[in-house]
Image 1: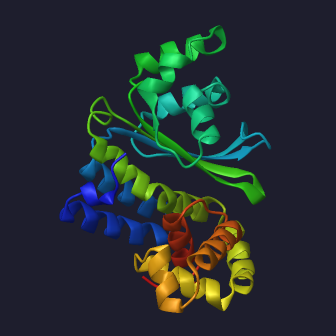
Image 2: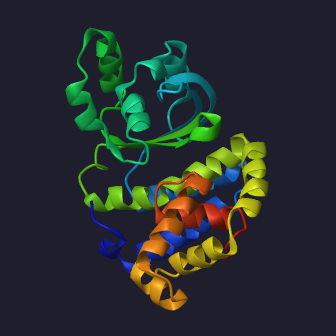
Amino acid sequence: MKDLSSLSKIDLLNLLEIYNSCLRIGHQKELHEILKKIQNLIPSSLIACGLVKIHSFNEVKKTLKIINHSFPNDLIAFYLKLKYQHVDPVVKTALRLKGTIVRRTEIFKYFQDKLRYQYIKDASDIGLLTGLSFGVIKPTVKLATLFSFCDKEIEKDPRHETILKALMYPLHLAFLHLAQPQILDRSNKQEQHTLTDRELEILKWVKEGKSNWEISCILNISEATVKFHLKNIFLKLEVQNRCQAVATAIYKNLLTL
């Protein structure tokens, strides 16, 4: 997948605006406004997101909250009534490949067993076979957010995937804040005490776009030491990469935009 350098300046400005909105979200209606802005960037006629409790092996245990942006409400009710979230191959793959954009057409090619046959047939009937989805997990509390953007045009341009990849973690934080704010509040208090001054200093330079080598030169430490601190930062913030670390730090007021 292409990185952000493949996007136009207008795209990047729009991403920054959405990014900031995600980190400052306060009400559910603001999430709908964010999703509308995403619809202006990429073709995504059907959007829904959910918060689920997961088992230790990243399977859906319980659906805690659904925010339906543009699906017909009866389709969401139908999906939940038949408990399709427990057999949906996109959900299973998104949780297994957490932090990865899942192409729905590719997933449905390989899940044709009898257990999921009826779901796949129904998904085809209502236009759910084409789209991009992702899941992000907060492992310490066994919670995951899932987002699906469905449209027959969305998989045709790599730009659409690049945009969603950039917004994946901010959207996760926004939804988690709306649904379970007390979890993030507890994490915030804990992480303010566990991140060291050196780790915060390194995060500040990561936010500025500096490489490990550049940070090592600025701080007069070895590149291996920078990598060591980043590994600890990722563990403490429960993130997988630099972008997620910066997003989480800004959200928790450890860094400023």
